Amino acid sequence: MTASTSRPVIITVDDDPGVSRSIARDLRRRYGEQHRVVRAETGPQALDALRELKLRGEPVALLLADYRMPQMTGIEFLEQAMDLFPLARRVLLTAYADTDAAIQAINVVDLDHYLLKPWNPPEEKLYPVVDAMLELWRTTPDPSTDETRVIGHRWSAPSFAARDFLARNAVPYRWYGVDEDESKRLLEAAGVDGSALPVVITPDGSVLVAPSESELADKVGLSTSPAEEFYDLVVVGGGPAGLGAAVYGASEGLRTVLVEQLATGGQAGQSSRIENYLGFPDGVSGAQLTDRARRQAVRFGAELLTARQVVGLESLGSARRLLFSDGSEISAHSVILATGVSYRTLQAPGVDELCGRGIYYGSATTEGPNCAGQEVYIIGGANSAGQAAVYFSNHAKRVHMLVRGPSLEATMSSYLINQIDGIENIEVHTCTQVVSCKGSEHLERMTLQNSATGQTREVDTEWMFVFIGAAPRTDWLPGDLLRDERGFVLTGPDLRGKPPGWGLEREPYHLETSMPGVFAAGDVRAESVKRVASAVGDGAMAVTLVHRYLEML
Image (cartoon, rainbow, N blue to C red; front, top):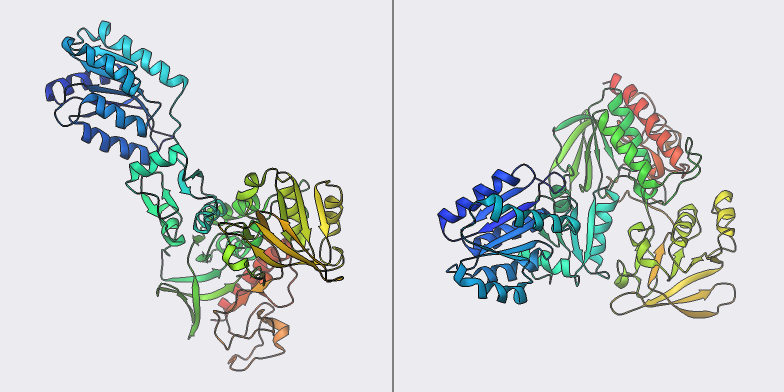
């Protein structure tokens, strides 16, 4: 049961089984419809229950504990319970002779009330007290959530990777810095010390310490395993081209599975705002567009596998087999390669060491609020860099765009150039490149060089986002699948007739590669137009050609 559907919990602790059953019965009679009553007969047992509730994100409204218990007194229990649920109201059950203990508890555990045993009739002696306590709790409820909770360090690269993975896959999560009080309570409940980060707690209470992406995907409900062994169509890559292919393939009756290594959307999914995509006159964020496409593909029946890395492609007669990094495999009649491109790494001393700790590839929009009032540097001069600059200008004191060329005109759409010109806190530095980065725990300063004059200067910053070049993700493909000198996949007319070993009478279809039945769509294809709309069009066209190919089998 997740927090959004769970009832606030009332915990009772008494070592006398008869008393324990009696108070739980009276509480359920009056409050059972709106609250869940959990009873325990020892303090340690009750603390175990509280830790589980904490991990599951369920709210605890009221704690009632007997003072005289052999293993742990009621005061000792309430004192430890406060560390887990500091806003839960606390009531001590005492005999008349123990009223001094109740007074002591007021000072030790900030007791809200003490209740004398026996409490008969409950309508006079129990319910008025509990009513008051619950009303007080409702005015300052213990925040609970059905979101995944991530505990990490601001400058921890693995912590950033976990947050980025969840955000890009549209998984709701809440971030806690490891030094926050709530983090300490969650770590205690989880029984871990926080030395290995991040610690991820899922809505069902599972605790993951420094998880891999595949482990994280499994636990937050993302599909990672194919439902079948054989499909009509496997789409590799979940950017606009891959999502377009999945939508059209599934909607046209093909058994379709889309395999994505990290998160659907690709580079477009990281864009803070796409303003030149048909049908969205006010613009749309990459995340919104991706989420709609993902839901559309699923609605038509496509399977979406996340956190699965494809490392090989083989031809087995009329079947095409894809190999995963974990040794498993799936096969299909046809394959569409839509792996897109990745940002080229910045070649400068210090960059690799500080990646994920102030230096990020792509927009990393999760970091926007953390940049408030600071100097942010965007490296690159294409549309993706411009969109990121506009986004971060809403948070940062100033955004500096570092462009290697003499202007933006050759690499960026004019609408975006005009928009940047109108934003006061964006400054464009042309003929400028990064030559080194320095920092201990995180990025602290950079050395910049003007390529026209050769002059260098140092700047202080904690934030740099890199958008340079585009490297196709094709190094995993077999050597006989032809590519151009930059690694982009050759298709159709670019193959110049039948490629070596083709084996068919016809020539390759327009988007077909040198391996029959394997097509390429989007940015990974040689000579493609690097735009979201054209990538989606490629995906749709590739499915049409898949149908033509399947008819010939």
